[in-house]
Image (cartoon, rainbow, N blue to C red):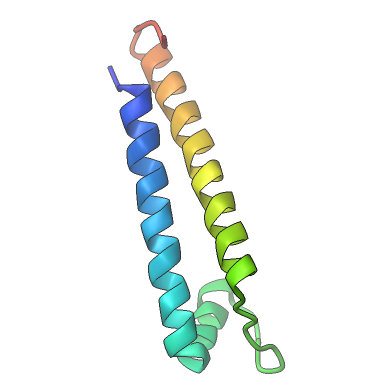
Length: 88
């Protein structure tokens, strides 16, 4: 049985940490990170530049943490139901 609350906490902390690391890399190495992103999503981003503001950083952080928590909760509920445990 997966402990839903612990999985949510682990997921939100992981997503938050990854967001902070990514934001720091974008701030320090914008061109390199833009190239890496372009390769990852298979598009040409030559005419695009990063816009990294404090408000964007915090809104993105909040969004990723919330989405990670929701995804973790859904994953745990489905897993627990599939293995026959009560999800509460």
